[in-house]
Amino acid sequence: MSEPARYPGRIRTDATNPFAHHTMRVRVPRILREVLLRNEDYEPEIGSAVEELAVALESNGELPALEGAAPGADAVRSALAARAGETWLGTDWFFAETYAYRQLVERTRFWRTARDPFLPNKQEEYASDAHAAAFDGALTGPAEKDERLAQLLAAGVFGNRIDLSFAASRAHGLEAAEDDLLVDDREATVRCFFDRTGPLHVIADNAGTELTLDLVLADFVVSELGVPVVLHLKEHPTFVSDATIADVRRFLGLTGETPRPGASGAARRCVARLAGEVTSGRVTLRAHPYWNGPESLWALPAELVAEFASARLVVLKGDANYRRAVGDAVWPADAAFADVTAYFPAPLLALRTLKSDPIVGLAPGRAAALEREDATWRVNGKRGVASLGGVT
Image (cartoon, rainbow, N blue to C red; front, side, top):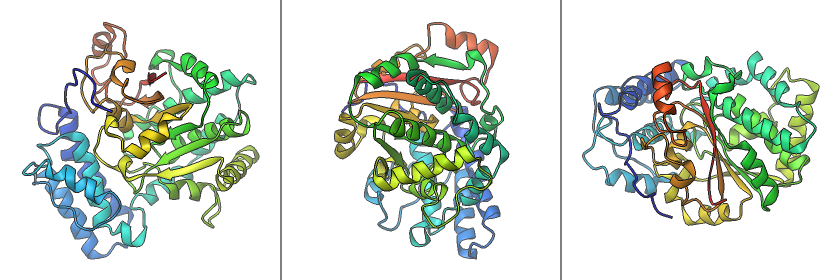
């Protein structure tokens, strides 16, 4: 696969993109310090190492070396070498974000302890009344299978608002106005789903409410449609709430822990079915270091290209994965998502609420109208897209 024609190049962390610059200089250091506040029993050496990283981001320090040989280390070091001499506020944004979180897990000794530095955030989300209500609400819907699939895909869009790294997005909740969905390719996606063969692949984003809604989709596809599901997850914790295999197994009670308390009978039955589907292999949980790394989607490793080529549909969740699909670039907003992602070897449905500047697939003039209506429409998490591309 190769990058799309007329690729504009990646957003950078300098002053050329105020949102990316603010994210790396302010938001990410704040997240790093919150890790220490929520994990007060970390050893002093860990606290010092994490604080050092926060200060380096704020002060535009040079990108540090990566130590160790944990999964994906060679690929990250290769990407780092290509950016020799660059600084946190003078590099491409997608690399900077993914590398900052890689540095965090190294400094908190995740590879030695398997302790998720963001677990307190995730536990709080799972224990919330809002999560329980979202879970129950997702379990009911139309009797017609195509309508039910379309409903669950819409839930997947606005479930992406519940991002534990971004309070502005969470504040919008799951309820959406009619014009909040800027691109709606669900009808074509449903036709594509029923016309093709092979498994459904879901490239997950956030744990918590969003992942629960993704799992309800997976349960419906397996139990009602008889189609196997592959759920792609992160190799290590990142972006605060990004989902790992451990998050799924913990939620389903497959780690010896009790599944989320307070769920309704219908929710408990869904969890039990999903646990059985994971155990039987009808739902496969898969992690690959690529999903934690800085590469664009057209730079997929060969083994993932081969896997996706036989997919019925690939559902790409979330803002960061959307950025990966379009090369984290600011394209003309009316560029076609299908054209930009024509390199992908299967139908690709991006379900995402907007929390960064990249956006394609809008009708001509729509971006300008939105700019007049809401100056922060690209980054505040209110609006979403269900955009179909790839090879359909």
